[in-house]
Length: 183
Image 1 (tube, rainbow, N blue to C red):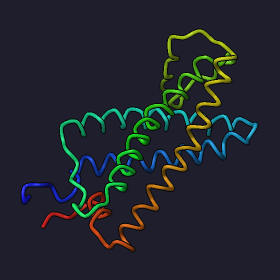
Image 2 (image 1 turned 90 degrees about the vertical axis):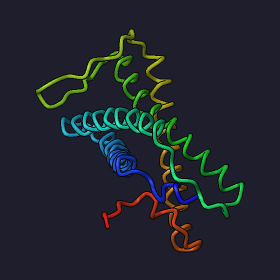
Image 3 (image 1 turned 120 degrees about the vertical axis):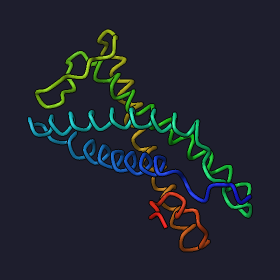
Image 4 (image 1 turned 45 degrees about the vertical axis):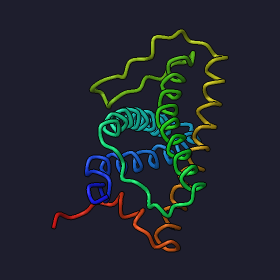
């Protein structure tokens, strides 16, 4: 299959790494900022929310891009269980990349003591058109927090698989998602 792409497109690679960096930043801001009871802590959580909404927007863009650009095939030698696991992890990533930011936005919107999501003093992200509801806020918080821990588990699996492919299998899986220089 000489016409099959060797790696992902430049746009897919850019979106992958931009989303990856933003997800790691968002997780760090949540873990660190949620423990600080001050104006500084509130600004870190606001930044966490902005990062999350950026992840949501880039993920929607990435899904749109993916619909028009098939990913490169995995090596034919890949065992069936690895194909299934890779596909499952990617689907779970997309669910979390959409669900975590949306649940955070919903949480901000339903929490009775609303804290706006602001872009400095330039703009404020609108709340979702929902009523405030403390019971829903508590449930949404729990879903958001569990989703965050699931994201950490998926990242660990994903990075572990990339390391395995690079250093144990010595195949080209990792190279498919790294930027390439034109010849």
